[in-house]
Amino acid sequence: MRTTRERAPRRTARQTTTIAIPVALAAAALLGCSSSDSAAPDAAVLRPGVIDSSQVYQGTPSEHERAFWASILDASDARRATAVQQLIADAQTDPTNGYTQFLIGVSFFMPPRAAVEALANGTAPPPFSPSPDAAPFLDQGLMHLTDPLYMGFDGMLLTGFLFAVNDPRAPAIATAALQHNPAAMSFGAIVGALSGGDGAAGLEHMFAFLDFCAGAPVARDGTDAGQLVAKMNTGALQHRECFSGSYSPHGSSGHLQLAGDLQAINGHPEAARRYYEAVKQTSDYATWPLASITERRLAVGATAPVVEEVAAIASTCGTCHTKALR
Ligand code: HEC
Image (tube, rainbow, N blue to C red; front, side, top):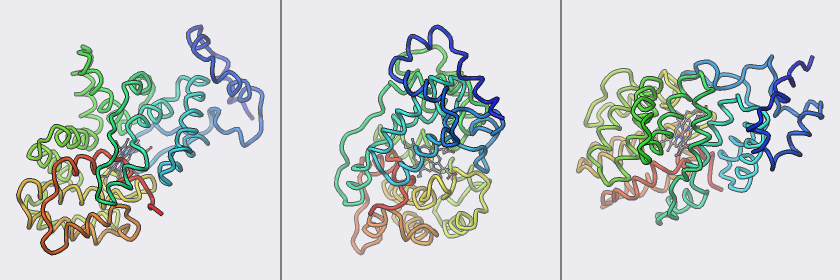
């Protein structure tokens, strides 16, 4: 039955030298045959990252991939750190699992729980920037993923590092990422524009994102924000990056809040208000960690946010990926 361990012993010399830390874990995976040992690959089970998951999540995540996502939903920094260590060991045992490699790379982009809490409290989050240590994992992920959603996402995150060191592969990887996952590229561009203080470019990229999600150009003045949120709530949009799902319980609220804030910093308070009202209509609003922000924006006499705050909302993954702050 467990023909499934065959991958583990096939190690190259290079992996053997870099495997120092997780030797014990790898050995346990090779020897252990208990059913709880689900971190090891099982050829009979479809892994995530293999077939197109842009509309519906595909495959069965490993025990440690599940633990990783559970820690993110719960905004538990400690459990996430543990899960990442386990994923690193898994990636050494089975260096062909692109989804595991992708998730390790992605983890370097995730600010701690304190960032979400600070935003909710209206204070500045602690400074954070993604470590280039992510790059080798993203690089490996890109070699093994065949699901365009993750290929595009992975390539989008990787190109930032590649351009920074003038890696000649950067333009081709960026072009491929855009083809594979336009939503991820637009989202990355929103974050990039906001981090550079360019609110106008941020709004343009947000429209590109919303147009892609709606499958047609959305109204530039937000007059169809109510229609958009209705589609988000009923899952009527095609691409799962566009609305709340099991891994992003507040994707809908987060995207609409950002659309509102981008309108606001570009001097369109009426359009902004339409998006903020739409945030309040999302089916996940009751537990949205940043609901206090939406309420502040809608309060009488509220002023437009500063671009730094909007940049932090966009780049704090917990904005959309935290289940609830308790
Ligand atoms: C504005 C909302 C929003 C923000 C902010 C956000 N995401 Fe997401 N993300 C989503 C949505 C929506 C999905 C689709 C998830 C689903 O199907 O449940 C998603 C999916 C993902 C996935 C793929 C999940 C899977 O395994 O299939 C990863 C990885 C991810 N996000 C990482 C991040 C990281 C890293 C950040 C921060 C740098 C981030 N996200 C910030 C909305 C957001």
